[in-house]
Image 1 (cartoon, helix red, strand yellow):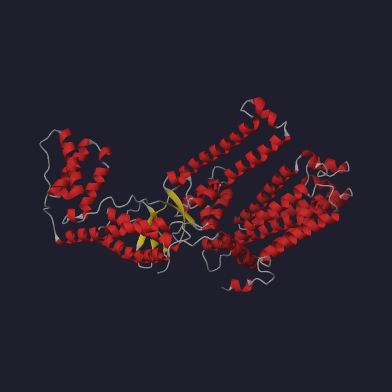
Image 2 (cartoon, rainbow, N blue to C red):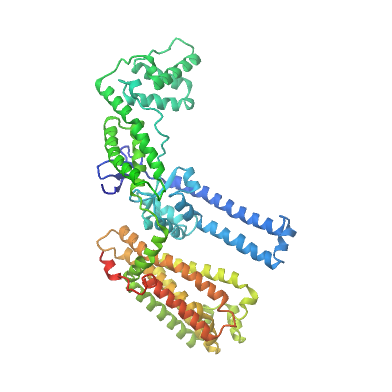
Length: 601
């Protein structure tokens, strides 16, 4: 049996947009795609939950450190150095992590759900019907930065309006879709021997009428109940008052569900009897499969015997679902089997997650393969950055007044007075705060250089060119006042890796733009998704590298106790570490990673 395929269709009524899970045995299970309204309400709920968590945590830390919520207690925090550090490390940083990682972390932990999505009964799934992988969830959440442009998710909503699956750009990039969850409460009844001869579809109507009883008007439900009982050949209490008749009719329907009403059915036929008998025979089997699925969900130490039993039961369940759809289309039994079938499929075919093994595979094979596939964009991005830096140097060196395009007025004044703006950084901002600010800024620039590739590569080209011009222009301006060597001394320890990661992010954005311009023999969406999958790996690895560069820039670069030789050594060692990491050599113990072989499968 092979994994199922997915196809987008519209229901026969034309009112629902669904994706269909097509099993190798030919069984199709529909999942309704969540509309923009449901997605928006879920996001609004999550937004409020996220804010409550952030402000609640901040307030808790503030009260515990400050000793109260009065203005005096809060202001005293900043007068005490230790208290200020506690608020920063224990309060502010965790709050930012909660705010920015709320969606990806919860979607990974809760299998495609968040509190808002759970409330709206929707979840994120991959386009093969399985639970979305951690990588896909990270990609769809990184692209929120694009979907939220220019404000209030306008771009994401616009894209969702014009595609069949209501997907925003992040879903298109990650290959995910939001669907309504089908929840099953189990088989609360099966029309078996107590109802032999009664068509289960008629019993379905009885059951649904009882469920909706309190929501219907008394006259409407009375009329429906009388018609059902007449069809099934049951006595109809029509001579009672309306209120008493209402109670009597409900009692008759409940008796019919529980024990067949104690009467012999008048419309019994062989087909209905056979269906009822078949359902009654398999009730316990389906409940057992349900229990097997529940036990296997999320387990890593699954019993081999149970796994084999579940696979065998899945094949049987496929046949039962086909029979139920043919004999009882649209019935509760058919819907129950659909949900059970989908749960079995997700459990059997979901890829096992081994965190350490995935990390090793990422660095030993996936990252070197991505580097090989992006070799031309890397060369192109490096060339753009270097040429832009050279142009920036030439412009400012030739026309010094153009320095105001690349440096602030304060920076210019400092240099003209014989000082660099970096000289007193540690006296103004603690190293810890400085490192956090720097790494946050660098990661933001890197992610934007990657995401800007969605503008057919021109956005990435602009970011690379602008950063190159700024770097060259600032070095030319400091050189005009004889301080370029001091700026180099400040930059060299962290800049080698920092600039390399930005160039790699630019190459990733170029790859994405090239896929949109030249999809080849793939559809533009398929080419875009593949390019994001390859290029996104480099960006994901670049983020922790920038964290290390930020630490160096906060603790080493502005510290005058480090000599130029020590700074060069630190920067070179970190850059060599990055090269070994990205080439796979660090994880293959000196053996060459099989990059070219991987590309050809």
